[in-house]
Length: 423
Image (cartoon, rainbow, N blue to C red; front, side, top):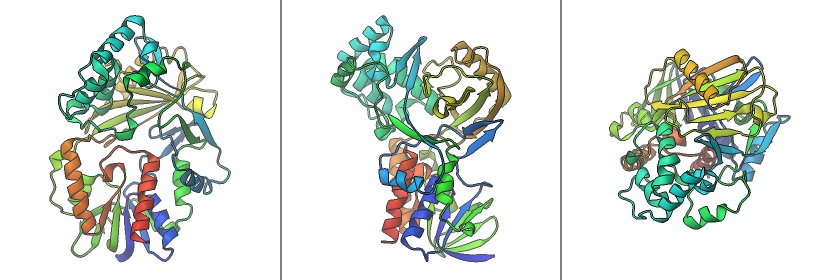
């Protein structure tokens, strides 16, 4: 079966569906086809409803900086209960809950740890040893802040040596602070929220409601699920899927960049790209636990997880509903049942679960989850994306762009691309 599309979109996640919506707004006559290998759209922005609990594949919360995009989405979600929440995020350190971000709240630490952090901050060597993420942490914050939280936590999350990551691996999402910021923050009341996600929105029906909003104006036959792109011929501008051959004008893909390069038979350095995986447990209990926190970070290396979030404190439900995230190297094969037992033991050890009973649970592995942004990956990403774009193939999103970004960033990026391609 052969077909033609002006725009062939690879991947029906937020990036792909966002581009499809934006381009049809600009050119309603354009033939747009979104091809998705999974049996349903959404990518990682999917929601599981089980035994009365509403969970996502992971914590997907929207932090809007562009009010017109939020309004555009809400207009396509009539009747949906969308909560706007002032974030309460904590860090568990030595049995004490410290406000996020750690580096701005060291005054909340036990006295000796506070003195260590403040002393090392003041007498740090501000010249980084190299251009790595780890060296940036030591140079900017000193040994105490780096080794008590920033390094162990991020090593658990990324499942890699932070000395291999680029100094700007987290971009604007890393909460930088200088000495004046840190000292000034000591006068702020506990619990004061700040940062890029000081507030967030979340639909009562789960993050998939945003996916439904993106699907709202697309024709039903514009999205083909359960169909994987196998190869893309740049010379003939045809793509072969598991079901058909499609001639295209342009391709817009949110597939991981090295996978897209392989599909296109484009020479690339696969060794420049690395990433972690994340095992997510969604856990539903018979009654509530703490009601004052939305998510919490855990730098303690002896604990299995790096972050725990409370859906029930966002949705106002009467049973504790958690997501628990564990970082691991790419390709890790997990014993899900054995790891669940350890997770429950660790939750009990930290007092998050006391005498609540587990009523339902769900797990999913995200692989890739967080990409490793290194100096090599930055250079190879720019080269590969440039070569693909010259051939009419545009790589977008976190994995297509091999970057660290928000869900809203994906919509901003694909809106700009649609404006460029259909001015």
